[in-house]
Amino acid sequence: MIIGGVTSQPIGHYEFCQRNLVECSIRLSSSPAPELSAQGWAAIEEVNRSVNKRIAPRTDKQIFGQEEVWAYPTTEGDCEDYALLKRRELARRGFSLSDLLITVVRKPDGEGHAILTVRTAQGDFVLDNLEADVRAWNETSYLYVKRQSSSDTGRWVSIESGKDVPVGSVR
Image (cartoon, rainbow, N blue to C red):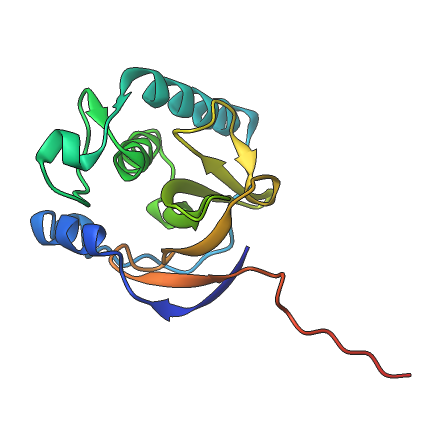
């Protein structure tokens, strides 16, 4: 995944941060993505399956009576709520927050969607409430828009699609 510059924070994340100041003000040291062990991969798969099974899909409008509320779900939630919970559970299992990045994408139909991206030396992997299996980011049908910064939990960076990169050659 090719990361661009700092970009706007989703409004739901901004409001989440206003309610959870400590969680959104963590500065992380810059480091290469870690090697993913078999135990780490098993934890990622287990958390993805477990959260997808435990949380019933419901919109913010159905739950809170308003649009775009980012919150930790207990029994029901929408896409960003699943991502938040998966992030918290993996962090409790020892994963660094610098490698657990909430990511905003566009589905093929153009609708916005949030997922959790796990950054590893083997590549970036997607934990998604719409998919039972964890997949490499480039094996999804999503258009990647932006994600949390790996060095600041309250900042967001753009994601370059890689499809629009101009290439030229000379002989």
